[in-house]
Amino acid sequence: MNSISLMFLVLLTYSQIVHSNVEKVIFTSSLAEPYPTDASFDNLLLVPLSEEHPTLRTQLNVSFPNSSSPNGQAHWFFLESLRPHQRYEVRICWAATQPTEFSLATFQVDAVLSDSSLLSSVSEYAYARHAKLGTGDIEALQRRKTAVRPDTTLLFLRLLAAADYYSPNDTLMMAAPPVAVDVILDRYIFNVFPKSLIPTALYLVLIAGCAWFVSGWVSRVCTAPSNEPPTSKKSQ
Ligand SMILES: *[C@@H]1O[C@H](CO)[C@@H](O)[C@H](O)[C@H]1NC(C)=O
Ligand SMILES: *[C@@H]1O[C@H](CO)[C@@H](O)[C@H](O)[C@H]1NC(C)=O
Ligand SMILES: *[C@@H]1O[C@H](CO)[C@@H](O)[C@H](O)[C@H]1NC(C)=O
Image (cartoon, rainbow, N blue to C red; front, side, top):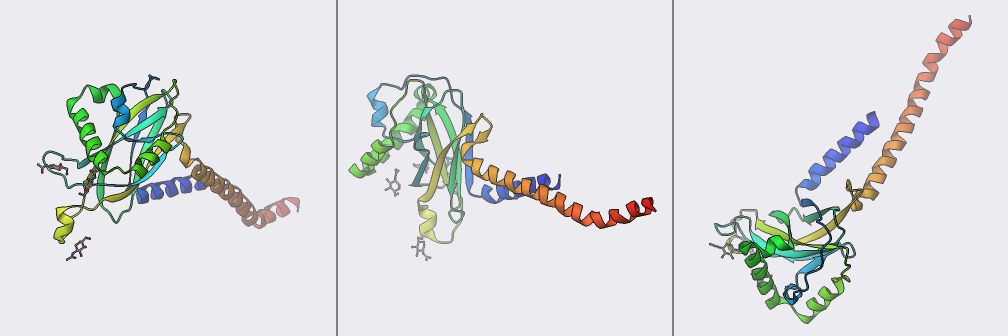
């Protein structure tokens, strides 16, 4: 019992430490649907995340919240080749030295196409990005592309990034510097446990198992001598 409660304590402490710079969204993918054939989809040139390419290390522009963008600047990605009816999470990790408020959300293709504010957000983002893309960036994008399988589904990921600090330095208050982030797509095994956490979980289980056996052995060693006198008394 002790080792199990210790394990929970470790997990709790750990999750509180990392909370300061991890944000995530958990979602269940929809039914398989054909990949949109519309060429404008490919022309968006959004960076795709998939099980084959689950991580992305990048710099994201952030902005201070204002009346028109209360949650900061929007960034859009594709979540591609998702297994249907499968639970996933997307995590974003960033350095605690760059205080930022991130909000993540996923949207089905139809939801974006039928909502004018989402659609204009996607196209604004795509236009701004196109202007900055070099040929190297486009080649890197092509390498991330996975062959589209018919039994998969596609989602939009929206990431809102708002600067979350106050500085006496006017330069930093006028324009927040871009934030270095890792964006990670993680599939849940049996829809309960994130795949990337399995090594950590096995490690904790191993530690807990060892602690269990060692504590049992220690208590036997410690209690053995005190058990001795009663048995010798009985035999007298
Ligand atoms: C709010 O911030 C966004 C993102 O930086 C910017 O595009 C927009 O012009 C700002 N709006 C106002 C009213 O300042
Ligand atoms: C990020 O911010 C820089 C500087 O303000 C700007 O030049 C660039 O176009 C922005 N990138 C995107 C993708 O909006
Ligand atoms: C303000 O911040 C900018 C960007 O980090 C830096 O280059 C500059 O030296 C700072 N200015 C002062 C007065 O600290």
